[in-house]
Length: 267
Image: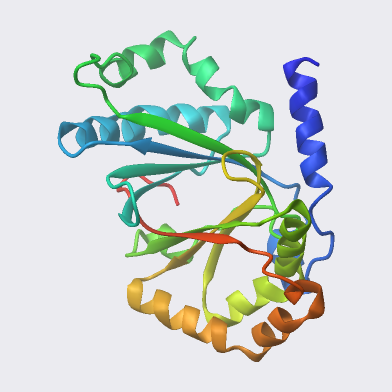
């Protein structure tokens, strides 16, 4: 099977696992738009000059080039709380999956881009620009088909981001957890005061089956206050107790990362 057919088959298979129901509020927020795809990229760095070199490359060279391809808005985040610091996270949304997964190949054929990117792309082996890069590919939930910018982005106000990944012990449990979001979890987050950015089902990545989503808050105090309100909400307690979702532990592991936007982040 060729690469294009393989990718199409993989995407179709994953799409079939997503629940079809959405709440009225979420439907209004999404406007009935087609679902986006997301690349979540991590650059593992070392403390020192790597950070400045990477910031210059991503902010001045990479993000403008990606925007020209239709990959926008691009989020760039520094890991504040979590393992493996320093790490730079990039969130690349695009409506066309082929554009997203072939972007690096196209950049390698762009002479103007390569000239601007030369210090980063051609860093010597003894002083590499980064330790290693890692990417995963996701498709937006049907009930949250487009990335939503938090209001603080428009004014570049102080904000942090909570990036959470839920791993499930089986594909069946994973499907149930995705369905749980569509059965009321979006609305509970909204009522609690969370700014919901994106929800993605992992198509290609490690430690699958899994899903990843991002919330935004003004600061750690608001993050803790909102999560307390979410856990105390009667709607959440009822949803979590439903036999459809409580028959076993449908989430086996949770990754919790707190990120801050880089000065050049578009999210």
